[in-house]
Amino acid sequence: MIAIDLPPLSNTLGFVALIYYVMSLAPTILRVVFPKTKKNSIPKFLLKHRRAIGILAFVFAFGHGYLLVKKRDIDFFDLKTFWIYIQGVVTFIIFTLLAITSNDWSVKKLKKNWKRLHQLTYWAMFLLIWHIWDKMSGNWTYLTPVGVILITGITILFLVRRWKEWQV
Image 1 (cartoon, rainbow, N blue to C red):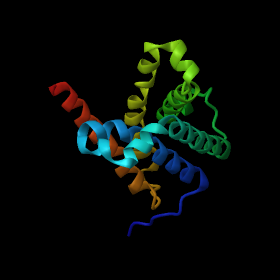
Image 2 (image 1 turned 120 degrees about the horizontal axis):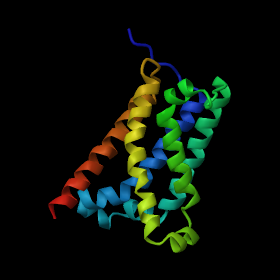
Image 3 (image 1 turned 135 degrees about the horizontal axis):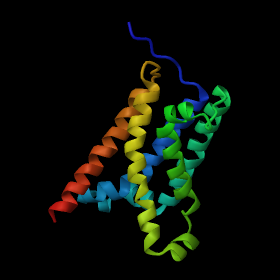
Image 4 (image 1 turned 90 degrees about the vertical axis):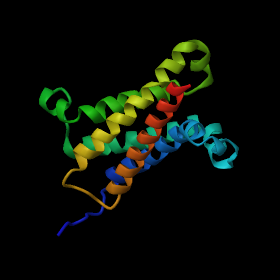
């Protein structure tokens, strides 16, 4: 029989970060894949508040990472340990760069490079699938399947978006 555990606070924060992250990705992806959603108020709201939603995702991801590093006393200067957590570390670095530059001043100073930098969010999307699958294998909580479905679903929609854009 499969036992599903209750999630610790660190995993719950990671799950909440994932929800906010998917909410930050959804508006643009939905507008291309499902053009009729342009008129819907939810994607409009998400698009209007995308930066704040992305920063909330970062804050919860920071809490997730902080609690796990503290709990496990992780030494990132040990290469073996670093390699075990590479997906989470790289994703967190991407989220940090995006959070730091999610303001009007950065948009103005970085110009075209701002958009290029924020394209890293799509790399983070793929890394998160790997991260969740790798770290939660054998330790699933009731949140894990929902998280896997959310990140996999938005990734599939992203790939459909890219395919549609490529067709034009």
